[in-house]
Image 1 (tube, rainbow over the protein chains, first blue to last red):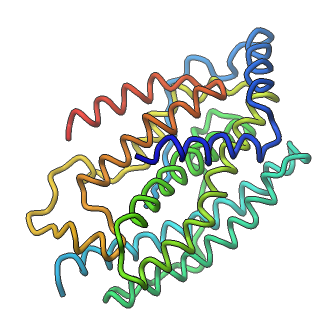
Image 2: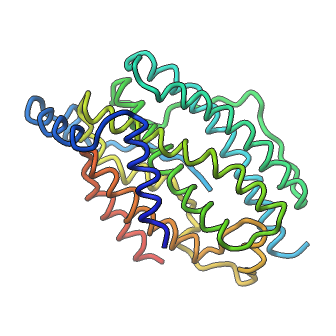
Length: 53
Length: 235
């Protein structure tokens, strides 16, 4: 199946387009989590979704 | 009219409306993202995407009409945010970008690549090819925004909200039995996935593309996985 290729092209390609290296992203996010609690932790309120193809 | 032609006409008419909504959404989101992340490439990507989606709307509407279903689009349509009202503006934008791009546009790309591999009619193939070139970028801009936000802000709040996004993405009929007169080969030739294939692509894309992507950028996909397991259990 083509899922692995889609992950590479879309997810990893998107991260590159956002100019954020994946490793730096993970490290920074881990540090960020240590600094502050989730902004909306514990909420169960749900929003909607977007219909597609 | 054959059952496949009738179902395909309805599907392309629905897609025309989906593409019109996407154009409105990307225009709105581009302006907000530019306000809090001026160095981001995402707003420019979204503005180009809005133009793409308007072109896709025409392509889908023309195909629907050629199959026998004229499409009446509301040119004054407005599109409110789908985010929970408790979120602040920046969180609400992230919610909507993840729902629209990381989930829906990624799922659309999986559908398009599956359809392209199924030898559709030449006119349909041309439309699918034209749209798929753009949809790659539309999915990527969601992952680009999530990756930037995972560095600049807290994104873990999204984890419990993923099931709501997923529930709003699908049609109720996705996990139902296919119509008795479903013509799988005829549908594929006209650019529509038969129901069982649509379900397989949707679930596989969640498990192998969307959830790993969310996890990579700090959004726990566990609740999404539980939603997927429950939904698949109904199939």
